[in-house]
Amino acid sequence: MLTYAKKQWRQGREIYGYHSWREKRRIFLHTLRSYKNYSQLQALKAYFDTYTAFPGLLEEHVGIYEVINRIFLYKNSTAKERLQCIMDHFDRLPQYFTTEAIRRMYTNDQSQEVVIWSNEELDLRATLWFHTGQRKEGFLSLFLFMGDQGIYHINFRLGYDYKKEPCIWIGTIQGYREGLANAKKLTKKMFGYRPKNFMFFLLRQLAANMGIHSLYAVSDEGFYTNTHLIRGNRSKKVRFDPFWEEMGGTVCPEDARFYRIPLEEERKTYETAKTHKRNMYRKRYEMLDTFIEEIAARSIEYLRK
Image (cartoon, rainbow, N blue to C red):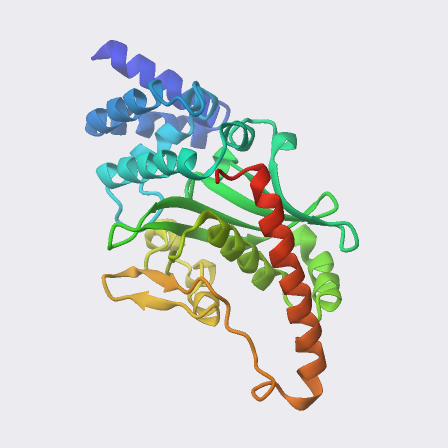
């Protein structure tokens, strides 16, 4: 038992560092929780020991161990559920992505990220990469950059829905404070289409090219940090529901912790668009249709066919 405790303590130091009292406290809690979740942690290691798509992935991303020991991904998740979420995601990866793409997405070198779309005129690129620090909300991230500046990213995981069909589970969508000025400029260049909406458009196209038809997103009710004691100040509470509803999402009847969001974006018709905005919408949709073709054409570089 003492040997196991020392091993988990070292693992905690590798995950958190060992400088501040906060880090030391997390290491201590990680070690204690490792006893409670012993079977799940052993199952996680055994799973990745035989993971052929990226041998050594767990050693490169040791922070994945933390997902077992903390209530991440969604509110009231259990260690058993989180283990299944991890295995579902990494089981699905080789079904969709080439081996080269998987190794590029999960290396610690972000310069190896997989580019799913780019546009020189707008100075934009959308990429897939896993940042270990985003493990709380998912196991892969879709990033949108303007030049070298991040604009938005979405954290998500692959899995199965309530009917056991392949789907995408979205953990969060976040913008970068430093990218706010660029986001405003981009909205004008894209005929009033907000970068946040465009970010979701990109995810929808990725899902479509993967052959996935169902998208789910964690609700305000289900977001893991909204129940933590440190969230006592309601002004700090994360709010996603209004955006999911704007995307056409509805609360899942099976579980209020999630929204189901349609794969296709609803578009304004000539009749429903205001007269003075019809030309803007026409140009926007022509632009998006071009992007759809570009994203699909590029997908052959990283998706299995």
